[in-house]
Length: 67
Image 1 (cartoon, helix red, strand yellow):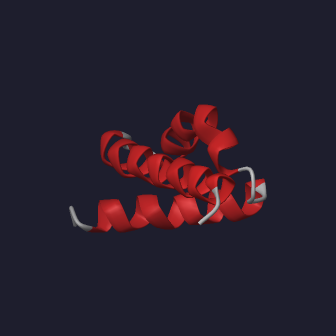
Image 2 (cartoon, one colour; image 1 turned 90 degrees about the vertical axis):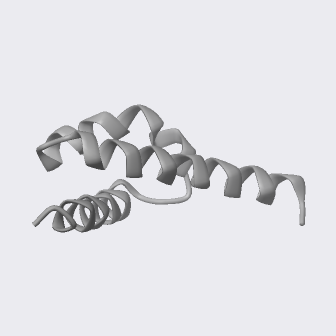
C-alpha cells in the first residue's frame, strides 16, 4: 500500500475515533457537528454534505444506545 493511501486511512481512522468519543459527550447534534469541525481537514475526500450526513448517522446511533 502506498504511503499516501496509508496516511489517508490513518487520518480517517483518527477522525472516526474522535467522532465516537464526542458523539457520547455532546447532548445535541449541532454541538457534536460543531465539535468535529476542527477535524474536517482529515476528511478532505468528502463533501461537507456527505460528512454531515455520516456524522448525523453516527450521533443518532450513539444516542440510540441510551434509549
